[in-house]
Image 1 (tube, rainbow, N blue to C red):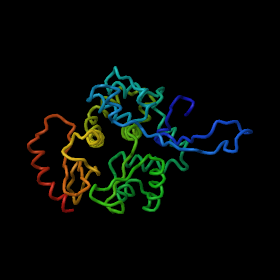
Image 2 (cartoon, rainbow, N blue to C red; image 1 turned 180 degrees about the vertical axis):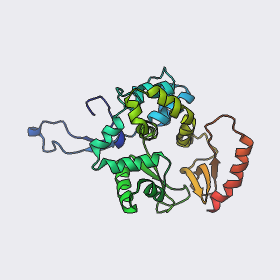
Image 3 (cartoon, helix red, strand yellow; image 1 turned 90 degrees about the vertical axis):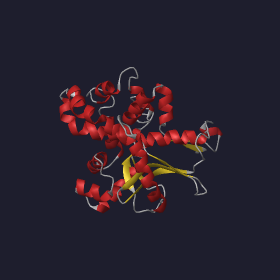
Image 4 (spheres, one colour; image 1 turned 30 degrees about the vertical axis):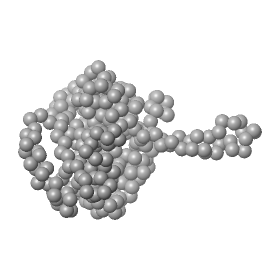
Length: 294
């Protein structure tokens, strides 16, 4: 816990807490020895939904603040998300304005390389080759720093749900939503924000792109809901694997697989108005056999 009251180090997704006997040193030979460890995970979307009570607000708040309790507690549920972004994330005197940078500079050696890679990921470069081209770093350097970021739970590697862990189709994504938002909308405009231009940045750069940004997190949110449905037996079958699928330019947002391999659920997720559901289903029907054969 840092001195500002954040119960979680965001980049570490909360730390590992060791449980040790409390018997005084001179009375127990076990003093100071670990008896257990608890890896504290961030809150899931279903917990944020339970906290806020409104699904649209929960989706928007989760896409920005993620599941770190200190970040969520810094937000004001009574205000809309854009007002929260302006007041709680983009104001220079706000707790969250510098927290991402503070965590990275505290936890990492040579943070400028990490900054470059995280910024590249936030811009949509999820393949190692694209990251190398964007940052100017060699493949070996990018691999080295990505490995460190994965260990810190700042980045995770995704593979198509039908592939094994050794798949060469792996893509890399930021794990913490606030980190992604910061690198997408705060870091590029630091100079302007430090001059007190938060309302302008929100109006000109956040508002026009916010629905698209939320949409990039909507698949993960729906997967979290599906996990909850699965535990409560609310789906046509119990799945053991869930994830996305992609191959040669084709992609399916969510695929759920049963253990027996004979039952499968294909889903498309859209966070936007005016969706032609008939067309979406038609495209999904066309892509579904590809997901089975790839």
